[in-house]
Image (cartoon, rainbow, N blue to C red; front, top):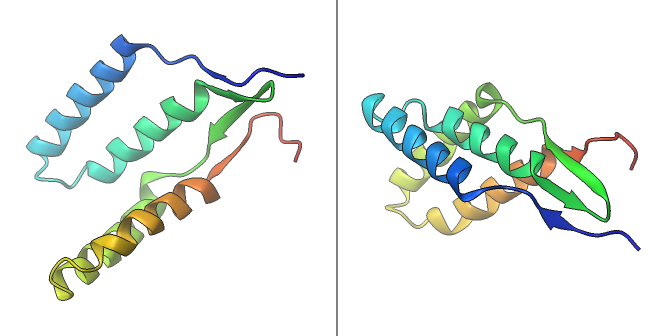
Length: 104
């Protein structure tokens, strides 16, 4: 039986959060997709499921198009789309998460 665990450290998480917040603030939100991708890469690279490490293959470029669409839909629907936004984001993350060994 394999173990599942997360190897991330608090210091790493805090640094990613602080740097991501500063970059998002300075860029007026334009770098937020990059921050999300960086955080997900770190999170997945520190996660092991049944003895198999995960890897996140999404890119900020692939997220930007979706992010703009989702943002516009949220504005047009006066915030109602935020209920779907969380689901769409989870679907995008899951679609771009794989086992590092490439065996499915």
